[in-house]
Amino acid sequence: MLRPRIVGKAVTPKSWPFEEAKRVADRLAATGKTKALFETGYGPSGLPHIGTFMEVARTSWVRHAFGVLTGLDSDLLAFSDDMDGLRKVPGNVPQQDMLAKFIGMPLTSVPEIKPDANADKPDKPSGGGEVVRLDRFRKK
Image 1 (cartoon, rainbow, N blue to C red):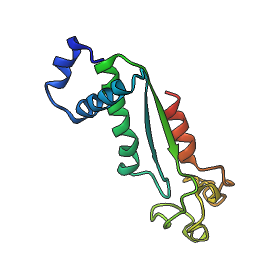
Image 2 (tube, helix red, strand yellow; image 1 turned 90 degrees about the vertical axis):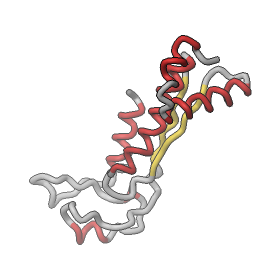
Image 3 (spheres, helix red, strand yellow; image 1 turned 120 degrees about the horizontal axis):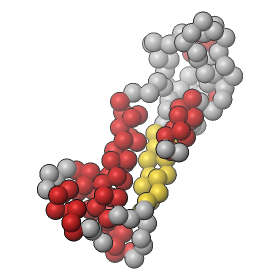
């Protein structure tokens, strides 16, 4: 299932995305299937941070390596646990008092905050901007 001409060049550095991709390819070959499903997600209960990015990036890197090694198609299932409760009010957002009322509530119930001139007028809950951004990423 691995493409021999590419494998020698790609695996030589032993970068972990390629090692993980090889494991996925081996497991896939054992099933007889020809398409892999990669899954990733996170609970956006606050502002995005490096951990939020890494949850999606690691899976994307392994998926890319899988395609390079095998030439096979794959699907990406990315999800956002928008029912995860707001854990605390981030210190760098406006309207701290208003947001404090939403601690413990699902992200879909927390109004969007605009850090601009209209910051005193939060948007209605819209399912969370994180969900919208994740969907944009998925479509790329």
